[in-house]
Length: 256
Image 1 (tube, helix red, strand yellow):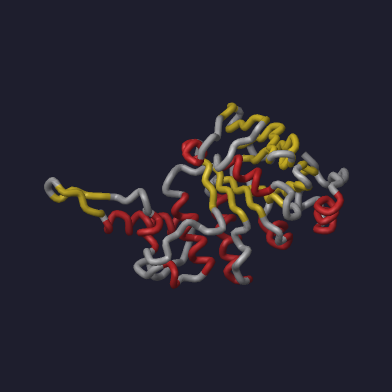
Image 2 (cartoon, rainbow, N blue to C red; image 1 turned 90 degrees about the vertical axis):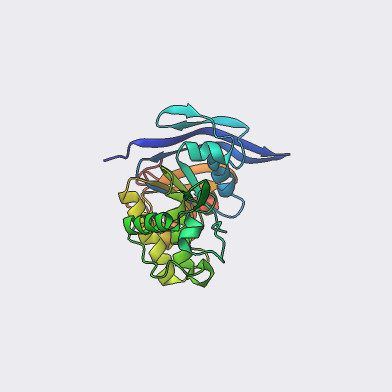
């Protein structure tokens, strides 16, 4: 059954001086759907994600959330719409522990007379709850995240996003610096996000990961949307051809 539409991008255009970075790009993402965004360097993938996340605006085009037009002119706008971005830097502070990072900037407090102090017990309990919901195994919550593996830090960063009501998570190469086992942990986590009804748009150059996790694969080339295909009906060579030649999907590719 086709996923109910969550986000729709309609004819987005973006110019950088004389460079037409995005050219009439359209894409839909369903509720609880994982869409992989692939293409060579300079294809426009990061620009598209920045527009969705509110880090920069488009020059033309429309964005719809659940069928209604929305304005995403800042990361705060995106957050209010339930859109969160996981950047390669993760945004974690290495010297802080798990629950301190999850609540960074949104600390829970309690009152002792007229004085407000950090409610570390409440934050720790909520952090354990969040990690448990996603079946994330972080055995030592009290140690600095700098001492954790790359996969564990990814999981902590994603848990931080889920403090708020999130409908869509944008991921830019989340497994780029991870080994095979650690990368698999992140793939498993994406599956669990999907089970919770959270949609994911993931940029990746790793087609093995893409074919293992994505419901649909969207291909960009030179700022144009070549098309979207289903991994069930397409091969890696089909996607490579789309990336390299800019030719759309064939009749079995379920092009959008």
